[in-house]
Each structure stands twice: as structure tokens, then as C-alpha cells.
Length: 116
Image 1 (tube, helix red, strand yellow):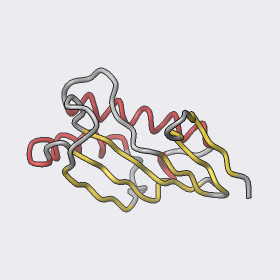
Image 2 (tube, rainbow, N blue to C red; image 1 turned 90 degrees about the vertical axis):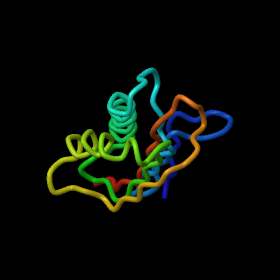
Image 3 (cartoon, helix red, strand yellow; image 1 turned 180 degrees about the vertical axis):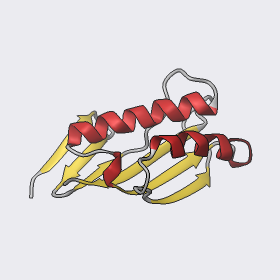
Image 4 (cartoon, rainbow, N blue to C red; image 1 turned 60 degrees about the vertical axis):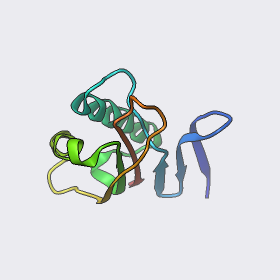
């Protein structure tokens, strides 16, 4: 089976496609400051990486969501997440509170998807 690395640098690959599976590293926002905007930015990055790997969000198998403050941001993040997911295609999911890479980052998401 062929392994394809996408957007690779010296530390990580943003995605790896291996056989019928696609693994994304944790995606973080760029410039947005609130949780709604940050979640939209992250999901946009996920859309782009999945497309480059030959799949899309309808084929998600699993997601892990890291929130800086789960008590403050969980509901708002879920609003954006639910609007983004295609109906009937919810993956397995874990959401946890975590200290993230930069103080301004409120959400980080990683996913695993199938390639049709």
C-alpha cells in the first residue's frame, strides 16, 4: 500500500493517506479570535486537507476535539460543528479540555477519514 504525506515539514505532516484511510494532524485556527470563527477556520482546513487526500467530511470515522476552555466554548463549538457535518454522517468523537500550543488558540481538531 502506498503512503502519501500531505503538507509535510520537518516536524509533521498535515495529513497522511494510507490505503483507504486518511489521518489528519491537529488543525488549529489562523486569525479568528472567538470560538465560532476559530472552529470555522479549523473545519475549513480539514475540508481542504480531506479534499487533497481524496475524501471529504461525509467519510469521517473519528474526531478528537481539544478545547482550551470546555466550560465556556463547548456549546458554541458544537453549533459550528453541527452545521458543518452532513446529516447522518456523524463520526465517533471525543472532546476534551487541553492546554493548547498558543495562548490564543481555543480549539484544535484532528480527524481520521475513509477514502472511498
